[in-house]
Each structure stands twice: as structure tokens, then as C-alpha cells.
Image 1 (tube, rainbow, N blue to C red):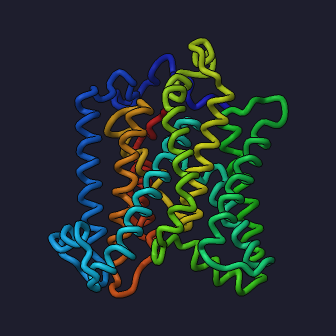
Image 2: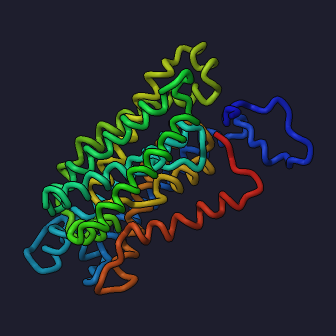
Image 3: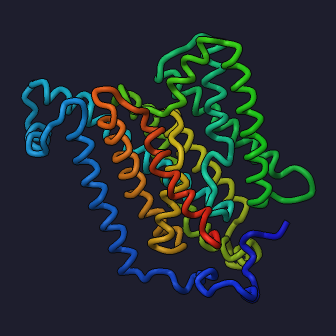
Length: 358
């Protein structure tokens, strides 16, 4: 199978000029900085909306006043006990999923890659379901540790399977191993939930992806994992940029290829595993946000990372705000709304005459 990153020596006849999209057309630094600044402004607006909307709407002036001086009123309790932790957790989860997607797409050199391609979501889901079915455990605080453990096991399994045989752990082999592991783990999960009604009920609630009722305790449990994953994602960004030139070029320029891949896999596992553990699977964020970021700032992984850190939180915050009002006073799972927002982006990319390469 040809390397998806191998640059074509010449452009095939009949292919339009804009299909090539060479790296030297990447946006210049001022434009990139402006894009990140604009993304930060969108994030601020998304935070304001998240704190304001809900079954009991609070105007922005009151939100600002109560943030500075809580007065014990019902609005103050709703704001500080429910909406502030929910907003912070949504922002952190959005940043984690977007970063995980950016690293995954760069690692596999596939613009349509998603953190789920490593089987992380499938591994987390399986261990949660097994915990409910075999041990009878319930509650999101217990799911945190089950989901993180399942994500880690799935990532290790993919890495081991992706390196068996004479071939090295190439991006294509890792992606194929991830698809295979994900399919197998999903099949086991479906078998368990069909055989256990309690596991099915708990799974149905958790798998939808929801921020409802999440507190500071949930954020505190996953914060160390997400922080460590974010630091690794930032650290490997320059090396991933060099590897985009090809493995041989990367080695010639001093990049430790194996170490970069391992650290990238660890970063994706920590970010996606921790986010999934906290709120359940939230799809398309890790796919759509990096695609938008690369469309705006080009292929420089450092700028993509910076833009993902502001667009990812804004994406999930706006999805959660919509989830609270679309069927008010009831709530729609944020995972469903995020998928409805992200699916058109995915469809638009797939319907293009050429899929952009990394």
C-alpha cells in the first residue's frame, strides 16, 4: 500500500491546480495569529452563552454580578453549583478531544482520522459495560477509572498489533490495527449489553455523552490525565511537523520516529480516554475541529494545536448550550448535538473532489 504522505513528483493530468494545496501556500503568521485571536473571542462568547442559557435563563449582567458577588439566591446557586462546573468541564473536554484529533490526524497522516480510530472509545466503553455487568458498579465517578483503564488497554493493544510481523509500526498499520481492535471490542460490548439488562440501561445513559450533573469532583478526577495529555500533544507538535516530510527525512533531521509515535499515542490515550471517561463518547469533535483548524491556519501542527485549544472548547460549549434549550426543560445529550454539528463538516469534506492530504 503506498504511503499516503509520499509527495507526488508531478500532478496527474486533469487534476485542478487547487487540489495540490502545497505547504508554501499556508497562511502567514499574522493571519494565523488573527485566527487564534478570533477563535478566543468565539470561546469567550460560548462561555457567556453557556453560563446564561438553560431551563432558567439568566441574563449576562446578572451572571457577571453573581460571579463576582454570590448572594445565595436561587440564580446564584444554579450558576455556581451547576453551570460553572459544567461550563469548565465542557471547555476542558472540548479542548482535549480537539487536541487528540489533531495529533491523531497528524500521526496517521489522514485528515479523516478520529481518536476512535485507535479503538480508545471502544476500549473505554467495553470496560465500563463489563464493570456494570460483572461487578454491578454504577455512577459516573466509578466509570472514570474503568473508562481510562479501557482506553489505555485498547491503545496498547493497537500499538502491539500494529507492530507485529516484519513491517514497522507505520501510520497505515496503526490505523488498520485500530479499526480491527475497535470492531472486535464493539462486538464484545454489544454481546454483553444484550445479555444483561442492567448493563444495557447504564450503557444507554453513558454512551449518549452528557454533561448533565457533572461536578467539580468529576473534573478533578480527570484533570491530571487531560493536563498530561495536553502537555505531550504540545511537545510532540514540532516532531510531527517534521515527520510530515517522511520518515527518512525526519530521521535525517534528528527526529526520533518511534519515540514521537509512542508519545503521540500516549497523548491521544490520555486526552480521549479522560474526556470519554468524564462525559461519555462525544463524536466528531476530534474530527471536525482539526479539519477546520487546518483549513484556516495551514498544516503547521503548532498553530493547529493553538487553534484547537480555543475552537474545541467553543464547539462543545455551543453544542451543550443547544442541548439544553432545544427541548427545554428537558435536555438532549451533548454527544447527539455535537454529532449533528460535526456530521455536515465530515460530509462536506468527503464530498469534495479531492480530500486534503497532510
